[in-house]
Image 1: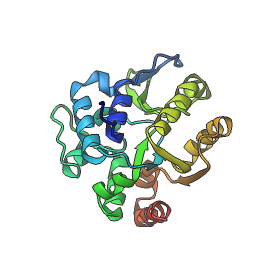
Image 2: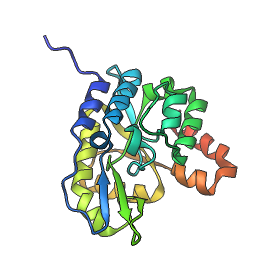
Image 3: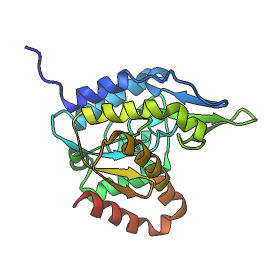
Length: 231
């Protein structure tokens, strides 16, 4: 008899099958870390087996889309290689990254009670779960958000809806969802109004915004996160 898949098995299967073949505006590209670096698949697998090898229902925290220095390398949302090794005990040999959002998230996780306690209750991912970059006139690649241009959002909208529905099918609670970033929340609300996926949306400031513009009040934002997540 086939054994029941764990939450980890479902997430790993989801990530293995990720591919975006839709249209994109000129100068935008999608990066798939699971295809670009074999070690990404391996460290991602270790992470989910470490924290999600069960069938517990979890609450959903929704980011924007992975940065090319965070989950765009590690395959784990809001986790750069520094925190992947220092906090999660999973070293990555082929890349070394520092991602500012990851700094805030893991400080918050530590105050929540640590990674094991946090990941028992929450699952983090994005409506567009692959990194998006924009090529500048001089050929440099910059991180991009799915909502940076209306045409970009229109291109990826159906893929985002399908991704959110697949995330929910992993075994996530839908009575309340936590959205990171106010602009992100505006677009998620559009999708939710159309597809009725979540009952309540709780919006929190995005970790990058906090680190970049509100670092002196970081402790207040951590308290705000903990108050929302621990209620």
